[in-house]
Length: 388
Image (cartoon, rainbow, N blue to C red; front, side):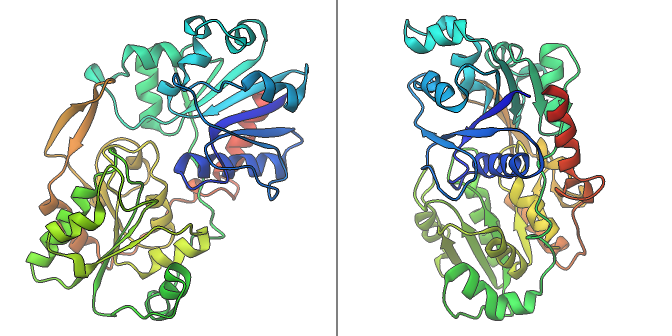
């Protein structure tokens, strides 16, 4: 059987892609007789993983300069499959090595035979509801193509002119399940999230946002929604869990500008799944603030914990967020070199939806959990075995 080398964000890091890679690779290592390793963008190696992790920094063309050396260390001259879990735009070096400057990497890619599989997040489309030509020309050079969602499958399929399979990223039902809001607010939020004994005011309307500090996460929408609720006389708290408070957005400055700094709590510590579950449990609602989602992991986790999530009615999260909790865009704009269609939402509409959703009984469809007869892992295992 061929060996499987995964290229993604580092599974020992904190990004969504790294989390997805870790969940999949952990299960391959545990439940399949497959030698697996990871080329992890950013982060570090770790002795805590039973499989090799090769930490790398991407080059100016997003290339992995030491790819030949990593392959040699991982499998020598044996057959292997490279399975990427990255944005398509970062993979031109891999799909089109002829465009690279002359180098050992270029020579290796043009002479070493191996299959390329790709698991592609699609969080938006361009004009004509397709990907831009550059992304399409990269994806169509892969031997096996897999989308996260039906939305992604449809967009890629329209772009390259053939049917595309899709598989959801699973949610860990052993970590994310309904917990007591009373216990979360009085004990566990302080212990699990803040690392100290703190009780939250039981009378606040607590909004949770778990997202990265990047351009595609609309933190302005989160703060504007919270400010709108304050204007309506609501006693609110806004819990923001993010990798850093200052990045594309300056969260602390925004809190002051919106006049809600006393209502905002920003956490940046690395939380385990069980820590996060207690954070969700303390909330009345959570917000999905992506300007299009490839999948929307925090939203699935929130629903699994029985906490309503409000998000936009566009792209990946529409797979599992109930229609009543999805807000219609009021406009669209085209963004960046790939001319991605990005939605614009009204904070007033998000505030209405948050109030309406509070107290609702919600859950995550079992097919979006990892385990179970119809769970995501059984589908993943079959897809991998078919290719190997």
